[in-house]
Length: 151
Image (cartoon, helix red, strand yellow):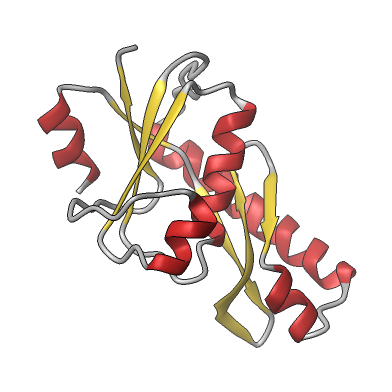
């Protein structure tokens, strides 16, 4: 769907990769996420509730970080990440469960001094609304796809 959003807005489309940090043995349960640039966001409730050891978090983050870099290089075909400084970015994701991936993307984009961040998602819940600062939208897209708008 990110393609459709970029096309509708007349903006370029690029990739900003984020990987879920799954709980070992229950990988579909997110204990956090890692985004481009190595930004890590943890779901404190999950980490505390399951008493996940910091060394386990580090191991999972390193593994997912390697996969994140591999995918970003494959998706970009060797092109460097575009300069996002001062730009408006719309992050399009196909689903939010804990919101960790979206929070990681937002934090990483802020570190790149993006001026404004918009979020578009099909399944944005009120809880994720509060944790990401997002507003509900009926437009959706693919995870890790980010159209950059002229700005």
